[in-house]
Amino acid sequence: MLRHRNEFPVEGELPGFDGAAAWLNAVPLTTATLRGRVVLVSFGTYTCINWLRSLPYVRAWADKYASQGLTVVGVQTPEFEFEGDLENVRRAMKEMDVRYPMVVDNDYAIWRAFDNHYWPALYFVDSQGRIRHHHFGEGEYEESEMVLQMLLREAGADVDQGMVHPETDGIEAAADWDDLGTGETYVGHERAHGFASPGGIVPDERRSYSAPTALGRNEWALAGEWTIGPVPARLDQPGGSVAFQFHARDLHLVMGPPRSRPPVRFRVCLDGRAPGEAHGVDIHENGDGTADYQRTYQLVRQPPPIGDRRFEIELLDAGVEVFVFTFG
Image (cartoon, rainbow, N blue to C red; front, side, top):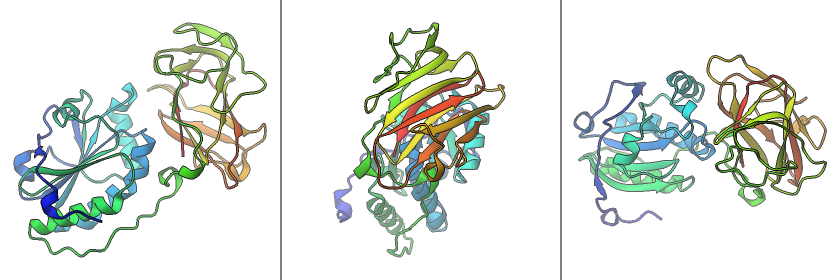
């Protein structure tokens, strides 16, 4: 239940958006131009699965309440270097139907000004430019919308109490938390864990890896010629693969060719077979897909019952970079 408005004390002043690399969908906004409007500041980065799953609600709030005094400002603060590439960001925002103002925060200037530490993060700003509430992570969408309604009423808007009910499908669908037995897994050697190829990781050197016949839950392995760098692993010869024993409804992989490189063809198998009805939105039932730029690809969305599965992706073209697995 929503707290009384007196229980939403001022947390600070809206610090503004100085240091932005670029603005999308709007001219640069300032604290002065936003004064008199309720502002929702939404931190994210376009490959973050948690941000992607919260996006339908933020889009819906931006659409529903814009005429009643709400301005949503998205802050794209990159986790990976390629997420600071403006062409990548523009393409991703268009594909995700993000139409509200978006500021690109490549140098973390806005992130630091808010003392933020999370993707996603929401900051609720009243019409006087004061931060009155925040929320970190997914969920609590009803409470967040009620806070927006309260701040709009404080500003004099006539707002009904109805809640948005956005369609959430594909990669934006809520996770199946009850069956989520595998967590985020990075591939670069700085944060990698669960690596099971014989001989382990050889950092920053091209090496021929092999995948064991059997993997334990949450173990993964490479096969073929790879260079495992601090952040991504790069495939150096066509035909390399990644195997992962996981337990989740959904499997996503952040990957793709670097800027100006051609698309990469790939093929996905589950337990040695084509995924069929368990295919994700970015592949066909036969497991075939193409990665044309670096983003999050949903490769598996399996129907119940959910059990341990061996995922394998064979990458048919060299040069692809693989960053992190996420699950839902």
